[in-house]
Image 1 (cartoon, one colour):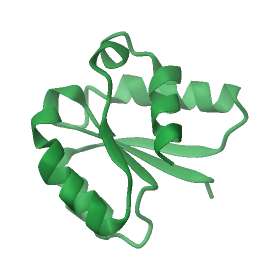
Image 2 (cartoon, helix red, strand yellow):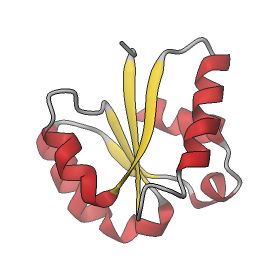
Image 3 (cartoon, helix red, strand yellow):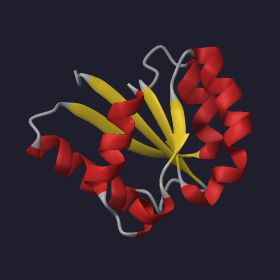
Length: 105
């Protein structure tokens, strides 16, 4: 079982899949055992209510307008969250986004 579970949420869960791969590579290079996955924002409620909920949630910049609504849900679940930096997202900087997630943990 992974040490930490990092969830990325975007409009459809598709555009973040390459970023997930880059983050997984950065975590592996750092000797870290993390489960990193992407889901649609529609799946946030299910993930937060599951028994195996994520340790941190990052929103894709394209859905940053949902931050207030999602933050209320993650606060209630006791899970830190933030929006992924647009530049790091656009450049697919998995190491930077991973560092952002770790800073929230």
